[in-house]
Length: 130
Image (cartoon, rainbow, N blue to C red):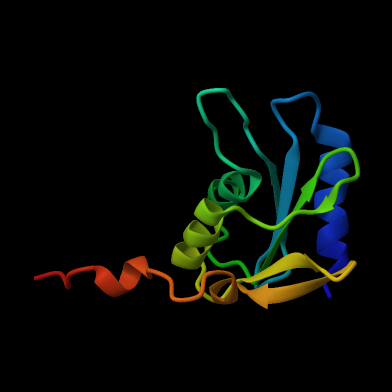
């Protein structure tokens, strides 16, 4: 288990999540070992989850592949599984990513596809360029 990645997200949740605008942190590990972190941007009109902010933050840092990702809640809520929208986006951007989720009082990493059985895969439905 990637406890270092969980701790990176937990550290960001403890130190950067303040108030209702930022309540979740995410951390992702690139194939070269780099760790990217992010927080959600809550707003009453909607806003991206920490995992989605992480996708953009990773790209801004030149990371276009992630091996593992985890989200952690503020106020010591621990590992929080991604919502449905995040699961779909993670599958589309990083089909091989493993997602750390809670399991029977512990944590485990599962392939993102396992979180979306019988899913729609966006890339499978794109027309080939002429």
